[in-house]
Length: 315
Image 1 (cartoon, rainbow, N blue to C red):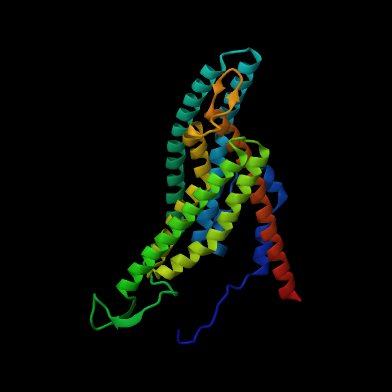
Image 2: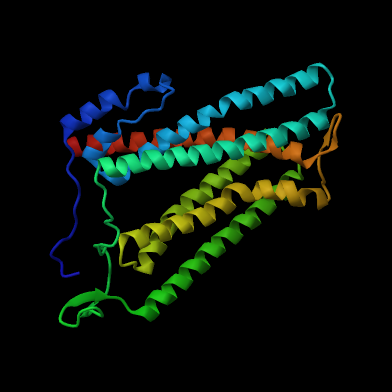
C-alpha cells in the first residue's frame, strides 16, 4: 500500500529444473504404475504445499488403479450375463450392490493409508503450522492489538468483512443456480436422448462454467480479506467445492431422480424396461471420457502457453 514493494516473482534454478524434468517429466514414467512421486525433491524445490499436492495425486492414482481389478470382474460378469442370457436386471442389482460395498471398503482403506503417508511426510519435513501467519495481501488499518494494547496490528472493519462474506455467498449461489438452469436447458434440447453429442455438449458446458468461475472464486476470496492463509485457503476450497459439485454432478442427479417424471421419461432398455439408471450409467461414462480428453487438451494448452512465455522472455 505504501508503494515500497510493487511486485515479486520467484527465480527458477535452470539446473534443478533440468534435473526434475529428467526424473519426473518424461514419457518413460507414464508406464510406471506405482505412480511414485519424487516427493523429497519437489519439497526441496517447490515447498511443502506443492509437494503434498503431488503426493496426493500419486497416491490417488495408485488407489484408483487398485479398483481396476474389481471393475474388470464386474465387466466380465456383465459380458457373461449378455452372452449366457442371464436375467440382466438381477445381475445389475447384484453388481451394483457388490461394487458399492467394494468402494466403501476401498475408501476407508485408502483414507487410512493416505493419513499414514501424510503423517510420515509431516514428520520427515518438520512441517509446522504456518497458516496462522498474517497474509501479505491482508488489508486493514493499523490499530492497537486486542491482545496487547501496547502493540499495533492491521485490522479490517468487521462490518465490511461480514458484508463481503455475504456477497461472496450470494455470487456463488447465483452461479450454482445459473448452472442448474443451463442443465435444465440441456435436458430440454436433447429431450432425454443421452448420446455422444449430448455428452460432448454437457462436457463443454461444464468446462466453460469451470473456466468462468475459477477467477471469480479467487476474486471473491480476495474480497473477503482473510487475515490468515489457512482461512483464505479454506474459503477458496469450500466455494470451489460447492460450485464444482453442482457443475459436475447436478446433471446426473437430474437423470437419476427427476428424469422419470418428465415427459421424455426414462429410455427403454431391452430386457429391463424403462431404466433411468442405465441412462445415467451410459451418460456418466461418456461424459467422463469427454472431460478426460478436455483435461488433457487443457494441460497441453497450458504447457504451450508456458513454453511461449519462456521463449518470449529469452528473446
